[in-house]
Image (tube, rainbow, N blue to C red; front, side, top):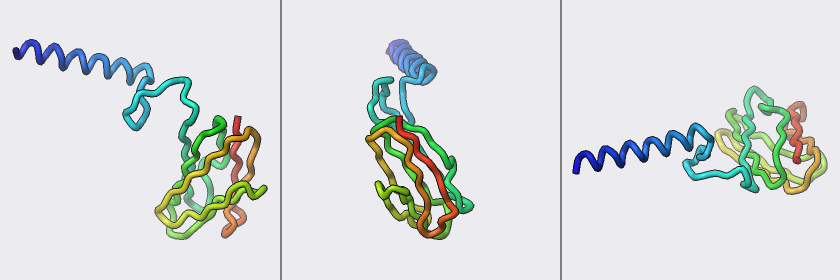
Length: 119
């Protein structure tokens, strides 16, 4: 019985290791596919800037903005397509379905600027 359990454990670890090596699992631990229609991307807000300032994503992707500062900021599209406040230590998401380049800024701190390129 012990040999059977050891064989099962080795098999599970082997398959899991192979999938991780090949990129078959995403960070949430769920199986992923090259055909996923929505991907997740992150932008950090710190030192009164967006990092990265420019990001390229697929249409339908969710971009997560995390405010790592002690003051509020906004994610405001220059064309008005989105406008969200991000309080200190909080996150917000933006999803854009239409391809194009979207310049954005913080309406509270206008020197903070970035671009989302949607393919």
